[in-house]
Image 1: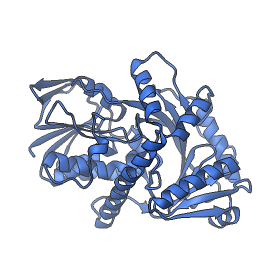
Image 2 (image 1 turned 90 degrees about the horizontal axis):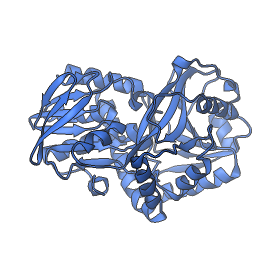
Image 3 (image 1 turned 135 degrees about the vertical axis):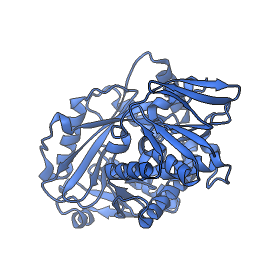
Length: 413
Protein backbone atom coordinates (compact mmCIF):
# COMPACT_ATOMS: atom_id res chain seq x y z
CA UNK A 1 0.00 0.00 0.00
CA UNK A 2 3.04 2.26 0.09
CA UNK A 3 3.36 5.41 2.17
CA UNK A 4 0.27 6.58 4.06
CA UNK A 5 -0.18 9.80 6.04
CA UNK A 6 -3.02 10.04 8.55
CA UNK A 7 -4.11 13.52 9.67
CA UNK A 8 -5.59 13.29 13.17
CA UNK A 9 -4.25 11.24 16.06
CA UNK A 10 -7.39 10.50 18.01
CA UNK A 11 -8.66 6.98 18.60
CA UNK A 12 -10.04 6.74 15.03
CA UNK A 13 -6.73 7.73 13.46
CA UNK A 14 -4.67 5.47 15.71
CA UNK A 15 -6.79 2.39 15.09
CA UNK A 16 -6.58 3.11 11.36
CA UNK A 17 -2.79 3.33 11.70
CA UNK A 18 -2.74 0.03 13.61
CA UNK A 19 -4.58 -1.90 10.92
CA UNK A 20 -2.71 -0.24 8.03
CA UNK A 21 0.67 -0.97 9.62
CA UNK A 22 -0.31 -4.61 10.06
CA UNK A 23 -0.99 -4.72 6.29
CA UNK A 24 2.56 -3.58 5.63
CA UNK A 25 2.00 0.11 4.97
CA UNK A 26 4.53 2.77 5.96
CA UNK A 27 2.38 4.95 8.20
CA UNK A 28 2.85 8.47 9.58
CA UNK A 29 0.25 10.07 11.86
CA UNK A 30 0.33 13.83 12.32
CA UNK A 31 -1.70 15.65 14.97
CA UNK A 32 -2.21 19.31 15.82
CA UNK A 33 -1.85 18.39 19.51
CA UNK A 34 0.24 15.85 21.37
CA UNK A 35 -2.14 12.86 21.02
CA UNK A 36 -3.36 13.33 24.61
CA UNK A 37 -5.74 16.30 24.48
CA UNK A 38 -8.65 15.25 22.28
CA UNK A 39 -12.00 13.54 22.78
CA UNK A 40 -10.30 10.15 22.77
CA UNK A 41 -8.87 10.80 26.24
CA UNK A 42 -11.74 12.44 28.11
CA UNK A 43 -14.73 10.60 26.66
CA UNK A 44 -16.90 8.24 28.68
CA UNK A 45 -15.15 5.07 27.45
CA UNK A 46 -18.43 3.33 26.71
CA UNK A 47 -18.76 0.70 23.97
CA UNK A 48 -22.45 0.92 23.26
CA UNK A 49 -24.12 -1.28 20.63
CA UNK A 50 -27.27 -0.28 22.53
CA UNK A 51 -27.10 3.17 20.90
CA UNK A 52 -28.86 2.17 17.71
CA UNK A 53 -30.94 5.36 17.49
CA UNK A 54 -28.98 8.07 15.63
CA UNK A 55 -28.43 11.56 17.00
CA UNK A 56 -30.64 12.88 14.18
CA UNK A 57 -34.01 11.73 15.50
CA UNK A 58 -37.34 13.40 16.29
CA UNK A 59 -36.69 13.01 20.02
CA UNK A 60 -33.29 14.72 19.90
CA UNK A 61 -34.68 17.47 17.69
CA UNK A 62 -37.36 18.13 20.32
CA UNK A 63 -34.86 18.11 23.19
CA UNK A 64 -32.49 20.42 21.35
CA UNK A 65 -35.15 23.01 20.59
CA UNK A 66 -36.61 22.82 24.10
CA UNK A 67 -33.25 23.41 25.83
CA UNK A 68 -31.70 25.72 23.28
CA UNK A 69 -31.52 28.84 25.42
CA UNK A 70 -30.90 27.32 28.87
CA UNK A 71 -27.30 27.93 29.98
CA UNK A 72 -27.16 24.83 32.21
CA UNK A 73 -29.23 22.46 30.08
CA UNK A 74 -27.71 19.14 28.96
CA UNK A 75 -28.31 19.94 25.28
CA UNK A 76 -27.73 23.37 23.79
CA UNK A 77 -26.77 24.98 20.52
CA UNK A 78 -24.96 28.13 19.58
CA UNK A 79 -26.90 30.79 17.73
CA UNK A 80 -24.50 32.54 15.36
CA UNK A 81 -24.27 33.73 11.76
CA UNK A 82 -21.84 30.90 10.90
CA UNK A 83 -23.06 29.64 7.52
CA UNK A 84 -21.73 26.11 8.01
CA UNK A 85 -23.61 25.84 11.30
CA UNK A 86 -26.81 27.06 9.66
CA UNK A 87 -26.40 24.48 6.88
CA UNK A 88 -25.82 21.79 9.51
CA UNK A 89 -29.01 22.74 11.38
CA UNK A 90 -31.04 22.60 8.20
CA UNK A 91 -29.68 19.20 7.21
CA UNK A 92 -30.07 17.86 10.76
CA UNK A 93 -33.70 18.98 10.83
CA UNK A 94 -34.33 17.29 7.48
CA UNK A 95 -32.71 14.04 8.65
CA UNK A 96 -34.46 13.86 12.04
CA UNK A 97 -37.36 11.69 10.86
CA UNK A 98 -38.82 8.36 11.90
CA UNK A 99 -37.89 6.95 8.48
CA UNK A 100 -34.24 7.89 8.95
CA UNK A 101 -34.23 6.36 12.44
CA UNK A 102 -35.62 3.04 11.16
CA UNK A 103 -33.10 2.90 8.30
CA UNK A 104 -30.18 3.75 10.60
CA UNK A 105 -30.88 1.21 13.36
CA UNK A 106 -29.47 -1.87 11.56
CA UNK A 107 -26.56 0.18 10.18
CA UNK A 108 -25.46 1.43 13.59
CA UNK A 109 -26.04 -1.96 15.17
CA UNK A 110 -23.79 -3.77 12.68
CA UNK A 111 -21.05 -1.14 12.93
CA UNK A 112 -21.13 -1.15 16.74
CA UNK A 113 -21.12 -4.95 17.05
CA UNK A 114 -18.19 -5.17 14.63
CA UNK A 115 -16.27 -2.77 16.87
CA UNK A 116 -17.26 -4.60 20.04
CA UNK A 117 -15.98 -7.89 18.62
CA UNK A 118 -12.74 -6.25 17.47
CA UNK A 119 -12.17 -4.83 20.94
CA UNK A 120 -12.61 -8.27 22.47
CA UNK A 121 -10.23 -9.86 19.95
CA UNK A 122 -7.59 -7.18 20.51
CA UNK A 123 -7.90 -7.36 24.27
CA UNK A 124 -7.76 -11.16 24.42
CA UNK A 125 -4.80 -11.36 22.03
CA UNK A 126 -2.72 -9.03 24.18
CA UNK A 127 -1.99 -6.82 21.19
CA UNK A 128 -3.01 -3.83 23.30
CA UNK A 129 -2.89 -3.60 27.08
CA UNK A 130 -6.02 -1.98 28.54
CA UNK A 131 -8.79 -3.13 30.90
CA UNK A 132 -12.06 -4.05 29.19
CA UNK A 133 -15.11 -4.60 31.36
CA UNK A 134 -18.18 -6.60 30.26
CA UNK A 135 -20.79 -5.29 32.68
CA UNK A 136 -23.43 -3.88 30.37
CA UNK A 137 -24.86 -0.39 30.72
CA UNK A 138 -27.54 0.91 33.09
CA UNK A 139 -29.94 3.56 31.83
CA UNK A 140 -31.32 5.04 35.05
CA UNK A 141 -34.28 7.38 35.38
CA UNK A 142 -36.30 9.27 37.97
CA UNK A 143 -39.29 10.69 36.12
CA UNK A 144 -41.99 8.49 34.66
CA UNK A 145 -41.84 10.44 31.40
CA UNK A 146 -38.18 9.55 30.98
CA UNK A 147 -38.93 5.98 31.99
CA UNK A 148 -41.54 5.72 29.23
CA UNK A 149 -39.00 7.01 26.69
CA UNK A 150 -36.37 4.51 27.85
CA UNK A 151 -38.80 1.61 27.69
CA UNK A 152 -39.69 2.56 24.11
CA UNK A 153 -36.00 2.69 23.19
CA UNK A 154 -35.43 -0.64 24.94
CA UNK A 155 -38.15 -2.24 22.86
CA UNK A 156 -36.50 -0.91 19.69
CA UNK A 157 -33.14 -2.35 20.76
CA UNK A 158 -34.76 -5.65 21.72
CA UNK A 159 -36.46 -5.83 18.33
CA UNK A 160 -33.03 -5.23 16.75
CA UNK A 161 -31.76 -8.36 18.50
CA UNK A 162 -29.99 -6.91 21.54
CA UNK A 163 -30.37 -8.34 25.06
CA UNK A 164 -32.19 -5.87 27.29
CA UNK A 165 -33.59 -6.13 30.84
CA UNK A 166 -36.01 -3.70 32.42
CA UNK A 167 -35.18 -2.84 36.02
CA UNK A 168 -37.44 -1.94 38.92
CA UNK A 169 -36.32 0.31 41.75
CA UNK A 170 -35.59 -2.82 43.81
CA UNK A 171 -33.48 -4.27 40.98
CA UNK A 172 -31.42 -1.10 40.86
CA UNK A 173 -30.86 -1.18 44.60
CA UNK A 174 -29.37 -4.68 44.24
CA UNK A 175 -26.94 -3.47 41.58
CA UNK A 176 -26.20 -0.05 43.09
CA UNK A 177 -27.08 -0.08 46.82
CA UNK A 178 -26.13 3.60 47.21
CA UNK A 179 -28.47 4.93 44.53
CA UNK A 180 -31.11 7.36 45.77
CA UNK A 181 -34.69 6.14 46.38
CA UNK A 182 -35.77 8.72 43.78
CA UNK A 183 -34.17 6.53 41.10
CA UNK A 184 -37.40 4.82 40.17
CA UNK A 185 -36.27 2.42 37.47
CA UNK A 186 -33.96 1.67 34.60
CA UNK A 187 -32.97 -0.44 31.66
CA UNK A 188 -29.90 -2.67 31.46
CA UNK A 189 -28.25 -3.27 28.10
CA UNK A 190 -26.23 -6.48 28.40
CA UNK A 191 -24.57 -5.89 25.02
CA UNK A 192 -22.41 -2.98 26.20
CA UNK A 193 -18.86 -2.87 27.53
CA UNK A 194 -16.63 -0.12 28.88
CA UNK A 195 -12.94 0.75 29.16
CA UNK A 196 -10.58 3.43 30.44
CA UNK A 197 -10.04 5.66 27.39
CA UNK A 198 -6.72 7.08 28.59
CA UNK A 199 -5.33 3.55 29.10
CA UNK A 200 -6.51 2.61 25.61
CA UNK A 201 -4.83 5.63 24.02
CA UNK A 202 -1.57 5.11 25.90
CA UNK A 203 -1.50 1.49 24.79
CA UNK A 204 -2.23 2.39 21.17
CA UNK A 205 0.52 5.03 21.12
CA UNK A 206 3.08 2.67 22.67
CA UNK A 207 2.17 -0.15 20.25
CA UNK A 208 2.35 2.09 17.17
CA UNK A 209 5.66 3.66 18.09
CA UNK A 210 7.15 0.26 18.86
CA UNK A 211 5.98 -1.06 15.47
CA UNK A 212 7.59 1.79 13.55
CA UNK A 213 4.62 4.10 12.94
CA UNK A 214 5.79 7.73 13.01
CA UNK A 215 3.75 9.97 15.33
CA UNK A 216 4.29 13.67 14.61
CA UNK A 217 3.08 15.95 17.41
CA UNK A 218 2.02 19.61 17.31
CA UNK A 219 1.81 19.66 13.53
CA UNK A 220 -1.09 21.50 11.88
CA UNK A 221 -1.86 21.15 8.17
CA UNK A 222 -1.39 24.39 6.21
CA UNK A 223 -2.15 23.17 2.70
CA UNK A 224 -2.88 20.04 0.68
CA UNK A 225 -1.17 20.02 -2.72
CA UNK A 226 -2.97 18.16 -5.50
CA UNK A 227 -2.35 17.05 -9.06
CA UNK A 228 -5.39 16.10 -11.09
CA UNK A 229 -7.44 13.55 -9.16
CA UNK A 230 -4.72 12.88 -6.59
CA UNK A 231 -3.49 14.61 -3.46
CA UNK A 232 0.30 14.51 -3.47
CA UNK A 233 1.69 16.44 -0.50
CA UNK A 234 0.88 18.11 2.80
CA UNK A 235 2.47 21.43 3.69
CA UNK A 236 2.75 21.77 7.47
CA UNK A 237 4.58 23.90 10.01
CA UNK A 238 7.04 21.01 10.35
CA UNK A 239 7.73 20.75 6.65
CA UNK A 240 6.24 18.80 3.74
CA UNK A 241 4.88 15.25 3.91
CA UNK A 242 4.54 13.25 0.74
CA UNK A 243 2.37 10.14 0.51
CA UNK A 244 0.68 7.59 -1.70
CA UNK A 245 -2.55 7.67 0.29
CA UNK A 246 -3.95 10.34 2.60
CA UNK A 247 -6.39 9.59 5.46
CA UNK A 248 -8.22 12.39 7.28
CA UNK A 249 -9.43 11.45 10.77
CA UNK A 250 -9.15 14.87 12.38
CA UNK A 251 -12.46 15.03 14.24
CA UNK A 252 -14.12 18.42 14.08
CA UNK A 253 -11.13 19.78 12.11
CA UNK A 254 -11.81 17.37 9.24
CA UNK A 255 -14.34 19.71 7.61
CA UNK A 256 -11.87 22.59 7.42
CA UNK A 257 -9.17 20.34 5.97
CA UNK A 258 -11.54 18.88 3.39
CA UNK A 259 -12.59 22.37 2.28
CA UNK A 260 -9.14 22.62 0.68
CA UNK A 261 -10.22 19.78 -1.61
CA UNK A 262 -13.53 21.50 -2.41
CA UNK A 263 -15.26 18.78 -0.42
CA UNK A 264 -17.93 19.71 2.10
CA UNK A 265 -19.21 17.44 4.86
CA UNK A 266 -21.84 18.49 7.40
CA UNK A 267 -19.98 18.08 10.71
CA UNK A 268 -20.20 20.41 13.71
CA UNK A 269 -18.43 20.26 17.10
CA UNK A 270 -20.51 19.02 20.02
CA UNK A 271 -18.68 20.21 23.11
CA UNK A 272 -18.75 18.12 26.27
CA UNK A 273 -17.10 18.02 29.71
CA UNK A 274 -15.84 15.33 32.07
CA UNK A 275 -13.84 14.86 35.25
CA UNK A 276 -12.45 11.91 37.23
CA UNK A 277 -12.82 11.67 41.01
CA UNK A 278 -12.40 9.15 43.81
CA UNK A 279 -15.98 8.50 44.82
CA UNK A 280 -17.12 8.40 48.44
CA UNK A 281 -18.89 5.10 47.82
CA UNK A 282 -18.35 2.40 45.23
CA UNK A 283 -20.17 2.79 41.94
CA UNK A 284 -20.33 -0.66 40.39
CA UNK A 285 -21.79 -0.24 36.90
CA UNK A 286 -21.42 2.22 34.05
CA UNK A 287 -24.60 4.21 33.66
CA UNK A 288 -26.33 7.01 31.86
CA UNK A 289 -28.40 9.23 34.17
CA UNK A 290 -31.06 9.74 31.57
CA UNK A 291 -33.03 12.62 33.10
CA UNK A 292 -29.89 14.76 33.11
CA UNK A 293 -27.77 13.25 30.29
CA UNK A 294 -24.77 12.43 32.50
CA UNK A 295 -22.47 9.46 31.82
CA UNK A 296 -20.97 7.51 34.75
CA UNK A 297 -17.95 5.29 34.12
CA UNK A 298 -16.29 3.34 36.98
CA UNK A 299 -12.60 2.93 36.13
CA UNK A 300 -11.48 0.69 38.98
CA UNK A 301 -9.76 1.40 42.31
CA UNK A 302 -12.57 3.73 43.37
CA UNK A 303 -12.02 6.11 40.46
CA UNK A 304 -15.10 7.17 38.50
CA UNK A 305 -15.48 9.47 35.53
CA UNK A 306 -18.53 11.70 35.14
CA UNK A 307 -19.28 13.47 31.91
CA UNK A 308 -22.00 15.28 30.05
CA UNK A 309 -23.09 18.24 28.01
CA UNK A 310 -23.71 18.67 24.30
CA UNK A 311 -23.02 22.20 23.11
CA UNK A 312 -23.50 22.08 19.36
CA UNK A 313 -21.48 24.56 17.38
CA UNK A 314 -19.11 25.47 20.23
CA UNK A 315 -15.57 24.99 18.95
CA UNK A 316 -13.90 27.18 21.58
CA UNK A 317 -11.84 26.04 24.56
CA UNK A 318 -13.80 27.96 27.19
CA UNK A 319 -15.05 25.97 30.16
CA UNK A 320 -18.61 26.98 30.99
CA UNK A 321 -18.86 26.49 34.73
CA UNK A 322 -22.67 26.45 34.63
CA UNK A 323 -22.60 23.20 32.67
CA UNK A 324 -19.91 21.64 34.86
CA UNK A 325 -21.86 22.54 38.00
CA UNK A 326 -24.97 21.02 36.45
CA UNK A 327 -23.11 17.71 36.00
CA UNK A 328 -21.98 17.81 39.65
CA UNK A 329 -25.50 18.61 40.83
CA UNK A 330 -26.97 15.83 38.70
CA UNK A 331 -24.59 13.19 40.07
CA UNK A 332 -25.71 14.04 43.62
CA UNK A 333 -29.34 13.58 42.58
CA UNK A 334 -28.68 9.92 41.73
CA UNK A 335 -25.83 8.96 44.09
CA UNK A 336 -26.30 10.80 47.44
CA UNK A 337 -22.81 10.01 48.73
CA UNK A 338 -21.42 12.05 45.82
CA UNK A 339 -23.49 15.17 46.57
CA UNK A 340 -21.32 18.29 46.44
CA UNK A 341 -18.29 16.83 44.62
CA UNK A 342 -15.37 19.21 44.87
CA UNK A 343 -13.15 19.58 41.79
CA UNK A 344 -10.71 22.27 40.75
CA UNK A 345 -10.38 23.83 37.31
CA UNK A 346 -7.44 21.60 36.37
CA UNK A 347 -9.54 18.44 36.77
CA UNK A 348 -12.09 19.50 34.17
CA UNK A 349 -11.64 18.08 30.68
CA UNK A 350 -13.42 19.44 27.64
CA UNK A 351 -13.59 18.03 24.14
CA UNK A 352 -15.37 18.52 20.84
CA UNK A 353 -17.20 15.55 19.39
CA UNK A 354 -17.49 15.68 15.58
CA UNK A 355 -21.27 15.47 15.05
CA UNK A 356 -22.53 14.58 11.58
CA UNK A 357 -25.84 16.01 10.44
CA UNK A 358 -27.59 12.62 10.37
CA UNK A 359 -25.93 10.77 13.26
CA UNK A 360 -23.96 8.40 11.02
CA UNK A 361 -20.19 8.69 10.60
CA UNK A 362 -18.46 9.57 7.36
CA UNK A 363 -16.29 6.62 6.29
CA UNK A 364 -15.09 6.50 2.71
CA UNK A 365 -13.11 7.97 -0.15
CA UNK A 366 -13.31 11.60 -1.21
CA UNK A 367 -15.22 11.37 -4.51
CA UNK A 368 -12.96 13.77 -6.48
CA UNK A 369 -9.68 12.25 -5.29
CA UNK A 370 -8.84 8.59 -5.64
CA UNK A 371 -6.22 8.54 -2.87
CA UNK A 372 -7.91 10.54 -0.09
CA UNK A 373 -10.00 8.80 2.58
CA UNK A 374 -12.01 10.08 5.54
CA UNK A 375 -13.19 8.77 8.90
CA UNK A 376 -15.03 11.34 11.04
CA UNK A 377 -18.46 12.44 12.26
CA UNK A 378 -18.85 9.75 14.93
CA UNK A 379 -20.60 12.13 17.36
CA UNK A 380 -20.53 10.61 20.87
CA UNK A 381 -19.52 7.15 19.65
CA UNK A 382 -15.91 7.68 18.58
CA UNK A 383 -14.48 5.13 21.01
CA UNK A 384 -17.31 2.69 20.33
CA UNK A 385 -16.77 2.77 16.57
CA UNK A 386 -13.01 3.31 16.35
CA UNK A 387 -11.77 -0.25 15.63
CA UNK A 388 -14.49 -0.85 13.05
CA UNK A 389 -13.75 2.46 11.33
CA UNK A 390 -10.02 1.72 11.23
CA UNK A 391 -10.64 -1.74 9.80
CA UNK A 392 -13.12 -0.48 7.17
CA UNK A 393 -10.75 2.26 6.01
CA UNK A 394 -7.90 -0.25 5.81
CA UNK A 395 -10.00 -2.63 3.72
CA UNK A 396 -11.02 0.22 1.42
CA UNK A 397 -7.46 1.48 0.94
CA UNK A 398 -6.05 -2.01 0.37
CA UNK A 399 -8.79 -2.97 -2.07
CA UNK A 400 -10.08 -5.82 0.08
CA UNK A 401 -13.71 -6.80 0.37
CA UNK A 402 -15.37 -4.62 2.98
CA UNK A 403 -16.67 -6.14 6.20
CA UNK A 404 -19.74 -3.89 5.93
CA UNK A 405 -21.61 -1.97 3.25
CA UNK A 406 -20.04 1.51 3.19
CA UNK A 407 -22.82 3.18 1.24
CA UNK A 408 -24.62 4.59 4.34
CA UNK A 409 -21.34 6.30 5.37
CA UNK A 410 -20.37 7.83 2.00
CA UNK A 411 -19.20 11.45 2.01
CA UNK A 412 -21.57 12.70 -0.69
CA UNK A 413 -24.82 11.65 0.97
